[in-house]
Structure formats: C-alpha cells, structure tokens
Length: 572
Image 1: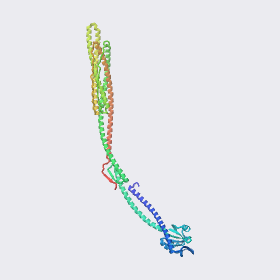
Image 2 (image 1 turned 180 degrees about the vertical axis):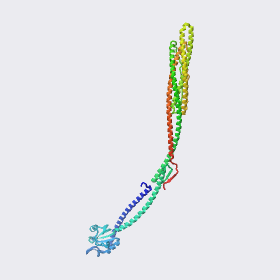
Image 3 (image 1 turned 90 degrees about the vertical axis):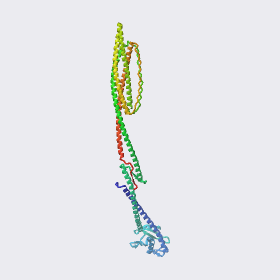
C-alpha cells in the first residue's frame, strides 16, 4: 500500500466508497420496496375484501344462516359452491374462502391439486375473528404457504358469528414483484457505479496532473532550480499549495540575490581590510625599530651620565677644598644669573591607534630638547668658571709680583697667592674635563634627537597624519658683577664655581632621570608597538578567513538558479 501512487490510492478509496454506498442504498431500497409492496398488497386485500363482500350481497339476497349443518346466504347454499369463490378470485386477482365457523366450506386454495375444503383457519385468526369479532389484516401462514390475508366475521340476523369471509394474495406474488424491482434496481446501481467510476477516474487523473506539476517543481527546487513557476488558478487545497510554493520561490530568489550581493561586498571589504592591516603592520614594525634604537641610545646616554656624575663628584671635592681655603679670604656675595625658559609645543592628534606612542615620542623629544638646553647652560657656566680661573691665575701672578716687591712683608701673601694659583690651575683642568664630557653628551643628545626624528617620521608614516610642532626658546639672560677687589674676586669665583658645580650636579641628576625615563618610555613604546603589530597580524588573519568564508558563500549561492525561465501548468 505504501508503494502505490496517490492517484491509485484515491481511486481505490472512491471505488470502495461507491461500492459501499451502492450496496447500502440497494439494501435499503430492497427493504423499503418489500415493505411497500407488502403494504400495498395488504391494502389491496382490504379493498378486495370489501368489494367481494358487496359482490356476495348483490348476487345473493338474504341473510347469512346455518341450516341443516350448512351455511346459506339467503336461499343459496355456500358449502361446496366453488364457482362462487372462483368468480371472487377472478374479481380480486387472488384467493377467496368462505368459512362456516373455522372450517373452509368453499375455497379456491389448491393443496396437492385439490381444493382445501374442510381445513381449518389458523388459531390467531380464529381468536381475533370468531371469538372477538374483529377484522384481521396481516400476513398469515395458510396450509404451509404465506399469504397477505384479510378476514372478516360472517354474522346472522341476531349478530351471532357463524363464519368468516377471506380474500388474500399469495406471498409469491410479493416476492415476484420484489425480485423484478430488485433486478431493475441492481441494473440501475451498476449503471450508477460505472458513471461514478468514470467520474472518479477523470477527477483523480486531473488531481494527479496537478500534483505531478507541483512534484516536478519541488524536485527541481530541491536541486537548486527556482526558475519554475506553477500556474494553477483553482482555489482548493492544491491551489493553496501552489500559491505557497510560488511565494516561497520568490522569497528564496530574493534572499539568494541579497546573499550573493552581500557576499561580494564582504569579499571586497575583506580584501581592503587585509591590505590596510598589512600596511599598518609595516608602519608599526618601522616604528618598533626606531623605538628600539631610541632605547639603545638612551641606555648609552645613561652610562655616560654615570661617568659625568663621577667626574662631578671629584670636582665637588676640589671645589670644597677651594671653598675651605678661600673662606677666610672672601666674604662677598655672589649673584648668579636667573635662568628663564619659555617653550610652547603644539601637537595635533592624527591617528587614534598610534596616539599613545605619538605622545610618548613627543614627551621624549621635549626631554631631549630640555637636556640640550641644560647642557648649553652648563657649558656657559663652565665657560664662566674657566674665565674666572684664568683671571684668578692672572691675579695670583700679579699678587706674587707685588709680594716679591714687598720683600719680607709680602712673604705670607706670596704663599697665599701661590695656593690660589694652584687652585685656579686645578679649576681649569676640571673645567676642561667637564667641557669634554659635555661635548660628548651634546653629541649623544644630537644623535638621540636624530633618532627621535626618525621615530617621528615612522609614526607619521604609520598613522598618515600630519604634525606641526612649534617650539620657542627664550635666550638665557645672565648678569654678573665684576670682582671689586682681587681677594673679593677670588672668593666670588670660588663661590660661583661652587654654585655652578651644584647646578651642574643637579643638571646631571636631572639628565640621568631624563635618560632613565626616556629608556622606560622607549621600552613601553616598543611593547605597545609589538602588541599593535600582533593585533594587525590577527586582523590580517581574520580578514583572510573572512575572505575565504565569503568565497565559499558565493560558491554555494551560485549552485542555485533563480532567473525566471519557464513555468509548468498544473491544470493538466
């Protein structure tokens, strides 16, 4: 049953329904017809009974009496009067019998080729008619044969029941009529069955044609071909399925078109993202190299700063000795030039991803410029100390000459002048060493500045931004007073030298802190650059994966056919 086609199943179902319906209707019709014929026959028997009784009254005048053991109608003896019952039988088209009490005395009922005279009536008839005086209309078994019978009592003038009058029709008459009608009914049922079967076959073939069109379209849709449109204008369930399929086909076609367009856009965006990530990664790698170079120079600068600090410590000890020896000579005040610096730097933000690195590079560049200015200031101070030392040496020489002229009175002063000259020579030697170290620092600072400019250029290339930097530096104004006296000049020179060394020591400490901060900043910048480089690589990898997925999606969409080509008509 599972392997049968839908049309065959529908035909089988319709045939079974037609057969069952025809059988049920035929059986009901047979029962109704049989009951109808029996009722009609019974009514016929009733009317025949009245008609036959009137016929007797008209033919034989007089009352019904029993005389000499026989039944009479008027003067006519009824017993054995078979001619009378034969005439009544011809008149009614059935059988007729006249009873004296319950015994048949005249009848046209034949049993074994003889008239059934002398036989008695059925007990139920005797009960109802003879004893109760009622008429009796019903199917009765008479001498082993069924009849549609009608009985009525025969009464004398005194109203006494002395017999019965019967007319009837054999059941074979009813059966023959029923059989004839049954043949006609069966023939009609066969004709109806043939017509209904033909209509069912035509209907099932039409349904099969419509379903075949739907099945073909669905099979092609299952293979990815959405170009088939089904034309079915009926409004039944199949028409609703066709309408739903056409709507689904249109919706899927639109969806596939949008998916194809979206996949192309995703592929293009993935390619652009990959190119941008590769360019950003290249710029980030260049920035990372520059930052590592800055960190290396900052480390070298930190080592040189340590050497300057050691030299400053030796210089501080020498100056302390000078201060101790000149404390007794000079109590003059020293006024040093106040340093003023005004700088303004403006940087406009360009790229958000490189902003932290950009700001760190700017801060490092500012610290390097500050370090250059401090170095210049220290050079100026050292130059001043060197001039003072030369002047002090000249003064000590003059003092020695004057002491020699004074003779014994200037002997003590000559000793002091000689000590001052030695101190001046030591100061000159120290200033030369500091000048040499400052020159090295200045060269390193310039190299670092050059590296930072390279880093700035790399950052500029990485974020495609422009930077405008304006720096202003105010010249340092210094006013100094000349030594009013030779001893005062010596004392002032010593104090100024001491103050310059302290300032130089502070500048060296600041320089060391700046170098260390620059090195830490460079390391942080290098780490950030490495993290950004790794992020760019991940973005490039994700963009490549996205491009692959987009290509796969395009290949899958291309398997579907959505352009309208032809249509199938399901109306067959």
